[in-house]
Amino acid sequence: MKRAYNFNAGPAALPLEVLQQAQEQFVEYGGAGMSIMEMSHRSALYENVNNETQALMRELFGIPDNYKVLFLQGGASQQFAMIPMNLLREGRPGAYVMTGNWAEKAIKEAKLIGETVVAATTESDKFMRVPSQSEIVVPENAAYVHLTSNETIGGTQFQQYPVIGGNVPLIADMSSDILSRPVDVSQFGLIYAGAQKNLGPSGVTVVIIRDDLVAESPKHIPAIFRYDTHAKNSSLYNTPPSFSVYMVNLVLKWIQSKGGVAQLEQFNRDKTKLIYDQIDQSGGFYTGAAHADSRSVMNITFRIHTEELEKQFVKESEQHGFVGLKGHRDVGGLRASTYNAVPLESCKALAEFMADFQKRNG
Image (cartoon, rainbow, N blue to C red; front, side, top):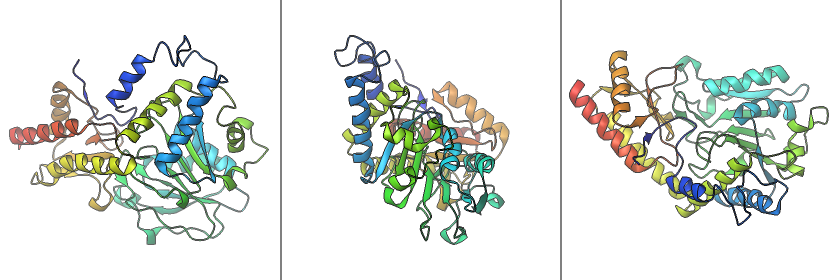
């Protein structure tokens, strides 16, 4: 079987070794005579998977002891609502850094819950960059500051996270770049990520939350939406997405086998450079969409000077086994998502295809 060159933005590429291991264990897991999808989430065998996956997240991401690791459902979109439900307070607005589509969706949900303010926005630059530290203005009474670490649509990424003064917790949606590089988790009050880009398949959302924020969960909202509910029950309050958690477990072991997050960061930069170099050395045939100092290592967005050529590029790329290179419908253009599991060989093949396409159409 020839594997596709998978550049989908999410759900996205998974490591072949992980898929093969899951295939081997699909019908029977751990000598139980059944699939992990069939067993009780209260069983010792599944609880071990749940606990081990939490421990692996802690080890690989350097998560301090005063944080909980939760496995929830509903994707990042549910977190857009859960965060303000749990953390907004009367007279204390949620401050949002606006860097594109996903940040906009987060603030839209928060406005339904309570007061919000925009701490910074790059809308005037069509969200093709992230704001500098000096542009981010946070009210002293803010309940939290929320940012999107990596915007998949525009292809922008914070190269360094802003330092927020006072006791205002920093919250980050890291759905599309979690575990792609080392992060100082202690800089954040809460980190969340849908799994379907760098951690595993869709269905499970990882939430890393500091203990003091867990304790703030208000009792007037439904139990299922309170962080303390899930923390007290080790993410087993209700039936979890057990197969997705198991797959995250395998992906974390794969990351461990590759030397950890620091090694993955170098791997990601090496493979992404192949494509960015092809853009930058094309003499203007290709142009990068995001500002150079805000370029994402996870989502490479670029344009060709006519829409007709972009459509031709997508059509021909699909004929050559490439998947997912059409840009998001909101911004158009082209996009290659180069998450952790995208092999170096796929990026080499894309760079070669881009060079050949330019030669034939330049």
